[in-house]
Picture 1: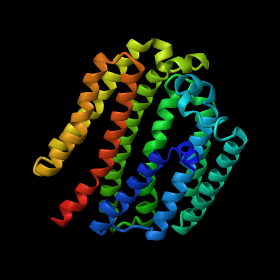
Picture 2: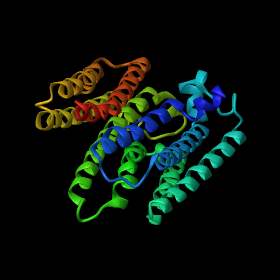
Picture 3: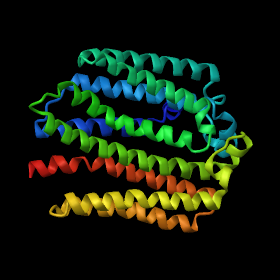
Picture 4: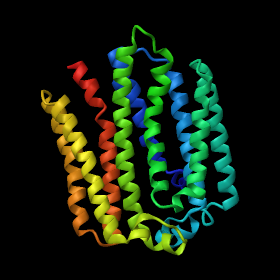
Length: 305
């Protein structure tokens, strides 16, 4: 069971589930925003999302056996504790369940075309694992878009089906907030994907992949990563200055738990040389993403106060 949980990356799936739950119950529900999903509906949306994400993680591991054998042999699951055939079967099962539940939810909210989102996400995760991740930057961008979409999909299914002329302004205001979080997830995941490519350069090179560190070298990629890390820092500072300057607690949270760690990451890049250094940077960015998810609670507590 533990091997299966590690195969589907249960910690990442929990973060997706937490983000979607907080969007529903810390951002939308407390403010009385019109939504299309009840408690069971949001459960189904979360279930569909994590099933498709789990399938994506499985197919990624299947096609990563060669690189993982070099990069992290102690964490190799497919072909070791779980056979490749079993992994393929699990990939198919999770996909069928996720897409099937997505089909039901789309009809539940009266927007059957939304079903195509689940099919597209499932297909892109397969194409990413089998081809795109071997291409220069495209794989990094695509997987980061899908991470952002796991956030945005809540706004798509909760707000758009009940959009009317009367509530248009408030619905779009909250949709923009969710879009901002999706952009934040995209940017941080893009940074993390590049950091992981720096960490895994040896195995990726032996597998014939064309990641950014292989194409332009580790030093240049580190500089690119530093420049990219500046973008979320300025965007979040802009948000804090323009939207949270009167809220000391919220501003403090963003400064100490999000802006500060990203700045630390940028500084750390100057001295990063080893696989261990890049692994630390990757883990730190993941922690920032977690604090970013928890920042949704600020809306809830501010309302209660």
